Length: 235
Image (cartoon, rainbow, N blue to C red; front, top):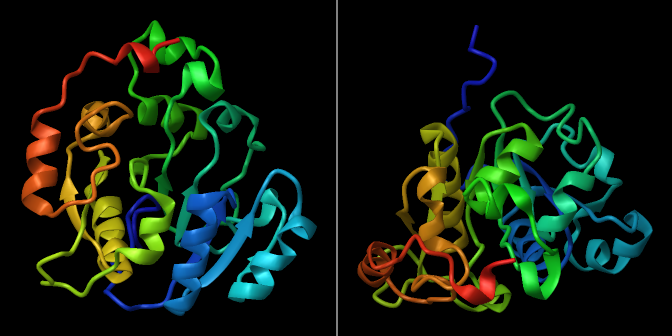
C-alpha cells in the first residue's frame, strides 16, 4: 500500500484529471491548453459554474462549483488573487486523487490589489509559503511570472532553440516532478528555483519575473535576484 502522501509518478503525455480554481487569464489559458492536450479538466471560479459556460463550451472543460473542482484530480491549479486564498472553502481539496499535486500561480500585489498581508510583511514568509499555510497542502509555485498569452503563443517542442523556460519552486520533489512533466508537455523547459523558502527569487520585481527566455538566462536571472522586496511590492 502506498503512503497516502506519496506522489503518483506520471509519464509525459499520460492524460490526467486536472482541477483549475480560477478562470482569469492564466486559468483560462491553462484550461485551453490542457484540454487541447487531452486532459480531463474541471474549472471553477468564485462566481459559479454558470458564468463559465462559454469557456466550457469552447474547450470541453467541465464547469463546476469550487467545492467540486478537486474531485478525482491528480493536479489542482490554484490561480486566484492572493487576497482571496483564505476565502476558499474548507475541504476544497476533498476527494482529490491520492498523492495529488497543487500548483499555485499567485503573486502579492499589496498596493495594486491585495492590501497588506501580515504574514508576508511581518513574518517574512514568501508568497507561496503563506499560500501553502492557508491551503494546508504542499504547493509548487509555477506560472506566476508568465504572461498569460505566452501559455498560448510560446510553446515549442523539446530541444527547440527558442523554447522558453519557466521557473518552479517547491519542497516536494515528487510534486515538482509532476509539474516538470506537465510543463514539458505544455511546451516549456523548467528551471528548479529551489524550495518554497527560495521562491522569492521569482516573485514580482525580480529579474526572472516576466522573462521569456531559455534555461541559461532564467537560471542566471534567478541567481541575480535580491531577497529585499521592491518598494512597489511592499504593503
